[in-house]
Image 1 (cartoon, rainbow, N blue to C red):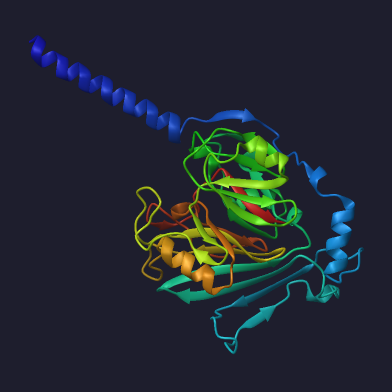
Image 2: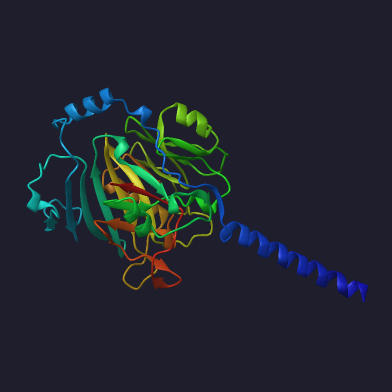
Length: 326
């Protein structure tokens, strides 16, 4: 009897432990900091902002008002597309920043949505947490977080709350300084987007360098315009073709937010390498992979523009955080 009882007891204990770990990792909420809406903007001096504005030829008093849409466009310069300015009736200055151009592509048998953003400084790229709370498994839909922060454009972030480790710097504030195994994307106060190897710097060191935003998901896709990954490379146990979310930089204060559909009959989805190739074709010098799959969501001008998939259905999945313009 004892010989039979031990395997049963061991099996039950193992199942209970596995269930606890799963709940702790994916379900149970751990709120570490509520009302996490602070920003450390000390790195953006008025002099720097004025210099960037003058360099761009924009009057100092100009307000950020220009948004447009280009749907169903391709790479060719002569491809026909429709351009819409949702605020055209208000007679805004077309040179105002930020400028956001939304374009839909059909590549790799997949619908891909690209928001081209020309900003006046890196401060334009903001982040927000679900429920304005930093913590484990505190989540909300990308569209809900975006609406709560009056975002014009938003994409899901790195879903930091599903991970125990990894650098988290948001709006100039260090929230997590534990090392991780993933590439770290840094957006510096001077507008530079760069990819750092895991463990090379602590979050406090990055903040001291003037890092405005830092994400830990990855991998890095492009550096100096060159693809960093192999055609076979993937994220963990992800499928070869997935919905994807990425962010990249073309030039100073010129960024692209990219989201693809996937896992549907209309959109196959992208491999990491296809995503890197696509962003390279768009002219990105630096590009980085954010959380994908069911998390991949783009919100623009009050609505979700892509087709997020969760559990085989067209449905937004709740996430820990977003990257937004607003």
